[in-house]
Structure formats: C-alpha cells, structure tokens
Length: 116
Length: 114
Image 1 (cartoon, chains in turn green, brown):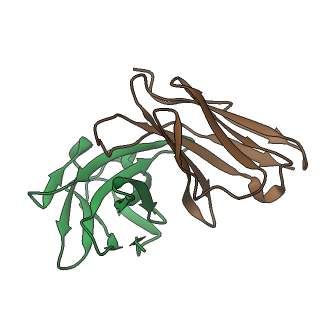
Image 2 (image 1 turned 180 degrees about the vertical axis):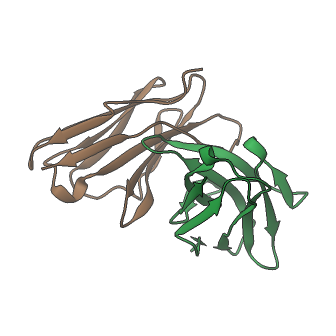
C-alpha cells in the first residue's frame, strides 16, 4: 500500500521569506507525484507534477519541487512567498492500480500562513 | 473553460433524509472521480468513472452511497438516509483521456447532516 506523509501540519513564514514544505512518500513502484493547493472554500488546484526526468519541476506562481528517489521525498519550495500564498498544500501520489495511474493518495495537508 | 462544476455548493439535510450531489466535468474529459474531505480523515477516494462506466468504487461505503454517470456531462453522488457522520465536503474531479494523470477539481459540495 502507498502513503504520503506531510510532517508539518502548520507552517508560518514572513512575506518575502523562502519556503519549503516537506513531503515523504511510501510506494514500491514508480511514483507520480503532485502538489495541489486549496484556498478557503475552493477546490484543489494543481501546482505542479512530476512523472519522470529532471527531478526539479517548475510549477505555477514560482513554486518548484524536487523529487528524490533515495529519500522518497518530494519537497515543495518557493524563493519568496506572498501573502496570497496562504492556503493548504497537499502532496499527492498517483499509484498504479489495475494498470491505470488514477487513484490519488493524499497527504494530510500543510496549512501555510504568510505573515506581513 | 468553466472548470468542474459542482452543485449545490452547500446542502443541509436532516438525519435520515436523502442527499443528491451533482458534478459536471470539464467538457471533453472522460474520467470523473469523487472524493470526500473531512478534518479527521482528510481526502479519501470514493469512486471513479471512465467513459461513463463505473471502474472503481472501492472507496464507497457499502451502504447508503451510490454514484452514477448517466451521460458524459454529469455525474451524481447519492446518499440515502444521511447520518451526521456523512457531513463532509464532497469533491468531484475530472481528467482527460489518453492516460493524462492530472485531475482537475471542482469547488466541492459541503454537506451538513443535522
């Protein structure tokens, strides 16, 4: 069975500071990994995805993530956060199931608060 | 592109009543997914349709929950005899054909069972 762990339930950073949100996964096969963001009273929006190749992937709004097979990690980073980045961030794994990579496994989410 | 549309956005039912939630996937998307989000359990997969056919309902509670996709433009999730523990945000997502893995989510329906 697969799982995703986001060890930090809450992260607070000052506006303009750099950010790293941690994600560890457990899966015996080839992981397909995503970061989604959820703003209050909204659905989940895709930030970025990793399927293969370059372990550093770029996403929207200046976010990037780095895949590490040796560490089973997929951490999210941003060089300079803005107050509008305050939201809940989910690390998500897509695992092979019946030959189709459709079933998503979600981490518990990290609530990011950006302070002025 | 209007994105995934879910109606209603909020629904309040009394214990024992029926609730029907609607989802309109992105036009041209052939896969539809339902998830349930609660504070305690987080996001849980419920069921999946591809080309309107039910493919996987392994996350659906065995009793009282059912989902259908009568045509390519909408899917419904029905909960009979709702219970307080059914209170949650129900999210619908869709993805395109051809093995694309990204799922695009609607805003969700917040169900409150009194």
